[in-house]
Length: 400
Image (cartoon, rainbow, N blue to C red):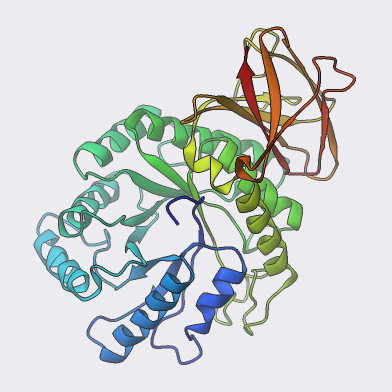
């Protein structure tokens, strides 16, 4: 998992559920996941602990990592007074599962609200790193957290790194599944949290949406891919989809990859193709890249700057009537990379580039760098690429 882009999902089953068997791990692997929330387990139940180990063992065989929710170690009640008790409970769980190669970390809670709950989140994450310094605790922040005061988020991220000793955090954002205005809010929200994480030196994961509910619309293959590619282009380092399974007790939730009857929906196969394609093309390369900038072309959404003639020394112009995103990256191989994502939700985008071919050649990167091929000359009539909705293309700049 360490050399591939982390892709996971939220799972709400319990290890006490007879219908929830280790076969689900193979289903996750089929869909292209390499990390997963493994469901709840009671460490005081010998049967549930045994079942959890079965999940961990199968995940390890398939090269996957699991996040375990033991019902302890969450931020909810982590006041100063309760902190020792929470540490004791988490340490008990850790002593049971520690050392398993498929264990990524323990679940630390979901969507703390601003103020005291964010303080409790820092406190509990510090406990996680004290008890299990080699693991990655998982905590998911609310969308729009401190949107009206970026400095507060900057300070919280700094404390996450310096006081809690964590270098990874997740947050959720679903507005992209509402309408076009929601997509603008999605871009703004991701930029807001990525900026704070980058300043602190923290890797940021995102919980995007795979389950329709309330005002959030059903997805499609194009929309799944759009969420993956835009997140990666904006600097997100991993995804945990909400959520994989529908359940009978929440009938408003629908159109998840697996329905409440345990049947795979069309969304399962859409998500499967998108995740597999993304990993095959970019999943390993992205783990070696560090984003250095992001720009938009087309409609100005007042979050990222628009790409212009003086934006980049080599890339002089984007030629497209439609919306797209361009991000640049540094790589450990010494080259500069950039990606282009088609932001049009429904139509193919023909995107052209004008670049200074006296200073550099541009090569298209396929299959995680297995294939590096010339893109085109600097003539705009030939330096074009066609991208379907949400599709990403990756390029390398080879300076002369």
